[in-house]
Length: 300
Image (cartoon, rainbow, N blue to C red; front, side):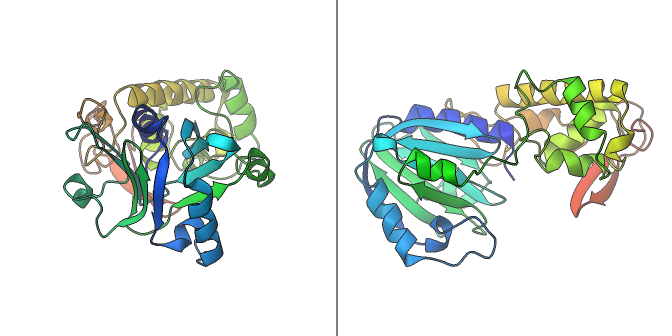
């Protein structure tokens, strides 16, 4: 799943590409994606028609991010909320600069050479290019709201914790919120209720940097460990965002370079490789069905 650094870089890329562009036509091939958020969504033809009718003719005025969500603000107060989930991707192709494009989200190899393709489910024909929403497993969603009031009424972000760059996200806040949690620390970091944007990659990396074993009970984290973990989260998320994230397979920055934080991963995806600190072989386990890599010696 694309995590905060990848989504933030996608937001920046799309902001450069589509702000001020008017939607000339919209094609929604899979109504399920615009019909709701749950995994058991029922495709709604009514919502598909409302999406097309509501978005057509409007301009993209701003793109914001909250956790891993993208909020597209359109003219006349209309809003599109998008979440890529495990398998979604946005790709933009310019009419003018044929060599420049923006692709971000889940890696989909065919999108590098062919747009649209078999995974393309929503197409926005814009005044200065085309925006595609691609999704291999259709877990993501792209929802339309006719007004800010209708968007806020659903309270999408009500259960989300603080952004890792928020001044309120402090070591003291992290310790206090972990103190009453009984779940494994990695699971708590990934549930988004304390701090947002961490998924499998950055949870593993932060816990390794802080020297905390992912299976520890959250309530067992000491103030000193919370301080180390807070510092690790902030520094890693800043660094990953700065270099474009970890989606090296297909993500492109505006200068066409790849997101390259994967080159700096210390443990994620490296089970069986010697720990970069002590040389002990890194171990892979499952935490809530997610592959988790850690050092049995360095992480206590």
